[in-house]
Image (cartoon, rainbow, N blue to C red; front, side, top):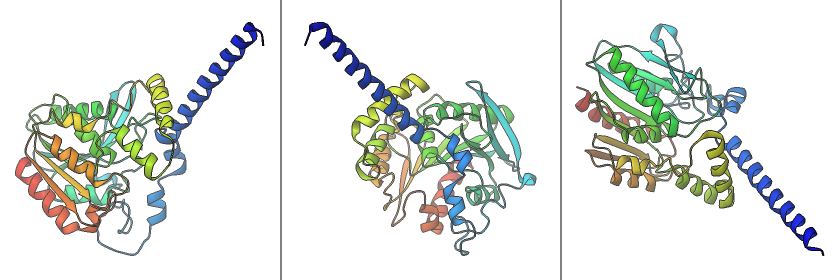
Length: 318
C-alpha cells in the first residue's frame, strides 16, 4: 500500500472516529439534558398516578387525588418573571403576610402540578412561597437543563428578586432531586444575609459521579459515552459535567443545611447524602428516612418529614 493511501486511510478513520464520537455525544445530551421532550410527552409520573387511591395527602405526584388542585389555582399565586441568558424564566409566587420566604425548586422533568401538595403544605404553614420553574420546564424558556449549573445562577437572581420585593425577607432555599443539587450549588455562591438556610432532599454529590453511578446500575452505558457527552456539552452548552459539583460548593457554605434522603434510594444513592452532609461547614442535620426511595421521603414518613422540616425552617425563618 502506497504511503499516500495509508495517510488518506488513516485520516479518514480519524475523521470517522471523531464524527462518531460527536454523534454519540449529541445523542447522550439529547437523552439526558434536552427538555423539549418533557413538554411534548408530558410528565410520566403525573400521567401514571393521577387518580390513584386516596393515600396520605402531602405527597408529590402520587398518593394524593388531583395533586395540582391548590398550586394550579390562579387565585393562590402571582406570576413572577426574570430574564437570564436571554431566557425568560417563570415562577409562581404564593404570598403570605410575613417576612418568611421559601424558594422551592423541584427536580428534573417534574412540574408545579406534581409538586402542588408540597407547595400547599409550605404555604398553609404561613410562608411566602416562590415556586421556581427551572429553565426548559413549564413556562420557563430554554431547550436544555444544566442539572443545576446555570440554574444556580438563576436561583441567585430569584433571591435578588425577593430581596428587592421585601428587604426584610428571610429566605430558606428548598429543593428536591435536581432542585436539591441546585440549592447546594447556590450555597457555594456569594449570597445576601437574607438567605438564612437551606433544605436539600435527595440531591446528588456531583453530576459526573451521578452519571457514572447510573451507567453502572441503570443505563449500563460504557464510560466513554459520558466523555463524549461531556465534550459535546462543553461545545454546545458551555459547561462540563465536572463543573457541577455540590460537595465542592458545600465546602464554601456556612449557612445551616438540612439534608434529607431515603435509605432505599437507588437513583441517587444514600451514600451521596452522607458525603454532602460531611462537606458542608455550617450548622447541619441529616434526616435519613428509612425505606424511602428517590424523592419519596415525604410520602414514606410524612409525619417525621414535616416535623423535622418545620422544626428546622421555623427556627431559622422565625
